[in-house]
Each structure stands twice: as C-alpha cells, then as structure tokens.
Length: 341
Image 1 (spheres, rainbow, N blue to C red):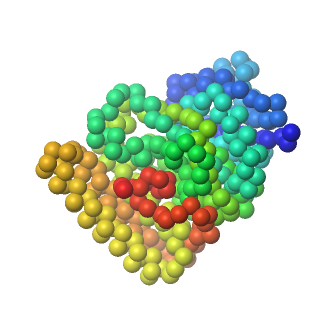
Image 2 (image 1 turned 135 degrees about the vertical axis):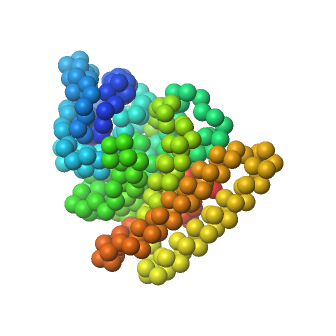
Image 3 (image 1 turned 180 degrees about the vertical axis):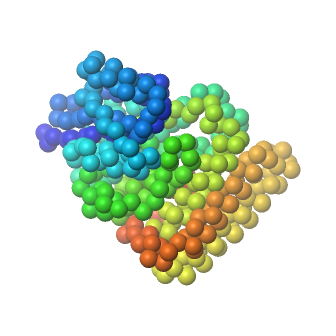
C-alpha cells in the first residue's frame, strides 16, 4: 500500500494544562503501518510550563514528538514555523484546544489515499463546553469553529482552522509559505483572518473536502462563553468575512466595494428583522447585540480595505478566485467564513 506521511502541528501560547490533555489524546491514536507521522509543538513564547509538558510526553515515548520555539508572536508566524520544521506530505494544523478522536490520523490517512486530487480537508468539529452556556450562545456555534456538513463526504469552499489538513505541495504552490496576506490571533488578541486565508489560498489550488470520519472536540473554556467575549470574537469574524470574500472577488475594486456594501445593508436589515423575535420573547436581546457587533466588524473590514494601500489591496483581491465548485458563498457557518444565516 502507498505510504502517507502526516505532520501534526500544534501551535500553542500559555495553555500548558490544555496542551497536556491534547497530547494525552494524541498518544491514544491508532496508527496504521502505512502511515509515517510526527507531532510538532510550536512554542510561541510561552511563559508557563509548556516546556515541561512537552518533555514529559516526549520521554514517555508514545508520540514521535518534537518542539520548536517561534519568537514572532502570533498564530500565523507559528504556523509558518510549523511548516518550515516539518517535511510530511500532509500538514495537520491542530489547535492546542482540540481533542482528536482515537482514529483521527487513521481516517485522515485513508482519506488522503482515497482522494488523491484533494488539496485540503477538515473533519467534524463538535464543541465541548467546560460549562453549559446560555441558550443564546448556541446560536453562535459557528464562532467557536463548529464544523458539520452532514454524514457524507462533500466538497466545500472553506475550512475551519481546527484540524485543518493541508497537502504540502498545494500549500507551497499557493504562495502562502512565502507571503502571508492576513494576520491572525496574536497572544490574547482576537484577530481573525489567518484560517480563512490558509483554506482559501490552498482551495484555489484544488478541491477542499469535508470528511465526517475525522472527528475532534473543540474545548471551549468557561471564559469564552461570556457576552463580552462573543461580542469581541464576532466583531473580529465580521472583519474576517470581508477579507475572505475579497480574496474570492473576481471583478474590479469598485465592483467589490458595491457588493460588500450591499451585503452589509442586507445583513443589517436581517439583524433588525430579528429584533421582532426579541419583542416576542423568542430571542435574547444579547443575541441581537452580538449580531450587530458582527455587522460592525464587517463594516470595519470594508473600511480596512478602502484605506489599504492600493498595491497591497490589489494583491489581496481575487488572490483565491480560482475556486472549487462548492456552491454559492453565504454569510453562514457552512462556508467557514463566519456570519449569520
């Protein structure tokens, strides 16, 4: 049987206890004989006991584990570091708060062999809440990277960052390894865009898929289900949607501006329409406030691109326009860009 090589890259910043739990789950992976695999932890200037956690698991020896240090703060530099320090045909970017099912690597390898034209895929991401959230929070599961497109394999336009599996050759041909256009989380700052850029630029090289057999749990700490956190993350995701959509733009800059502005007005109208549900007691006023923050984030994204130097904006607009045939883009979670359906 043809061999498959997979490198799991875990970028981490001051989450030692959670990282320990993630590595314990990885140590239970069932690895087929035809799979060559390794795990790389990218220490992004951690000041807690991340080093001790990694050393403990390295000495146990159940995981082919290494660690490297990336001094540039931020998820995107850490991911680039992970790419540069691995050699496998496939790179799995697994966040430091993602619990992989015991057969995750096995299912990923099997999928890679079955779909040789695939450039990237992601699996079913379910949310594991540390504390049961209030009901309105469940309306925004997409903001926590929930990913589920049913029980069958299907082509998709974008992928969430949690458990994103990318073909190295496609990643390199996308140009991302040489130049990253969007930023992502830096320390505790809720900046967004890196996940979308990765998926869309790789998707421009060939098809992306949803593979329901690769399952993972996304751990959601109690402090991430607060009203304040949801407002901030949805503002960031609103900006991320503008940036992602701009990468798919096939027309001129004025055409993009008209389309983006029109979508913003439609979204605002949709949000205001939901206020009736508040009056009828069907929806929380907090949910409307969060939707409005997404709208404001979207407007901030438009402003960001309008103010962007023309040369930089030109590089961003349409850079992932050669896309797979996953269907229409929409503002909901199904396309991985975040939003409200």
